[in-house]
Length: 381
Ligand code: NDP
Ligand code: MG
Image (tube, rainbow, N blue to C red):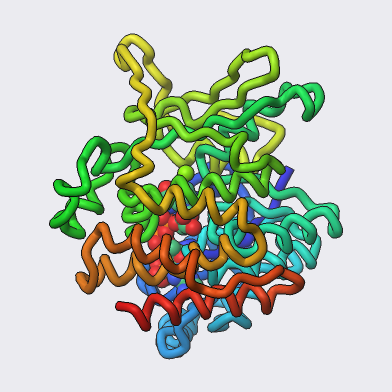
């Protein structure tokens, strides 16, 4: 069982819930990281007393160093700091919950330092899936999914006899706040409409990704790497209640599902305690209170991001890094009020077909594809 953990992105939605779980499990915390939210990080440092705290933003790191001068915690900044947190000697496990592609290099460093990984940062697998999975095999470490759908599939797979008996994965999607809306109805939706997720409370970027269905596209790519499945064997079904977190289907058409209330503390805890289970603060699922569950086909015509992600898997190489990079910029431009909601899908789709794709031989190929996609979006907007 994990004793000491390093948490990248500890001030975010997943990071704070991970600390909640870690506290209940009585784990030591050796490193915590934030981008710039030094007030929350200060509270965390005082409570969990890590030996290292990282503030990505250099100016904020200087300010932070003064704030916590009375503690024994060392302060670092930038990518150097994230890598130090990802490779901290004391850590048995690194939980990566930073948002975005910035998580890729720290994840690779953690794996090469033989750390087990609990991965929330899906962009890492989307952009650099082949590199990450090769590094996991080479270093003989374990990577446990935190994303609820992937945790569900991982849980369902526990009883599997042989891989050839697995027919397909079925990812559930809540459909987000815009499920059932037509293109015309989505023409003028606002940022606050997009941030109003029906079932989950999450960081801003992933909430907008859920509204555009990019999140589900990223998750199809993530699942294809984690479970070594082609995209045509990964179905997406809209399930409005977010009670079934995902399913697997065997060749005999028997389906296994994982259910629970929508609360990330279950998948976070399972990633840390696997294969053991412990009590959690999450409420029990009451089926009679739930009453019914509904299922629908996704609307691939309106939500173009999902199509772009599926095409990116088939195109291979840097294609997933391109859709991810383009989306990171488009998502931010939308949140900043600079583009309309529907433009996100057009931008991601066009980036996939206009930015030059390459094979991935090393991490620089991924970083270059990401940079080219960002440049492409900034040029066209
Ligand atoms: P948040 O935005 O709530 O938190 C992100 C964390 O990363 C914060 O600690 C933030 O620091 C830090 N961060 C942001 N940008 C950078 C950067 N450039 N460099 C270093 N650190 C940075 O995100 P979430 O917790 O919602 O999501 C985290 C990851 O988990 C994402 O990849 C998301 O897709 C995935 N995920 C999230 C789920 C959820 O329920 N929230 C569910 C499934 C997956 P600061 O606070 O200082 O800005
Ligand atoms: Mg998810």
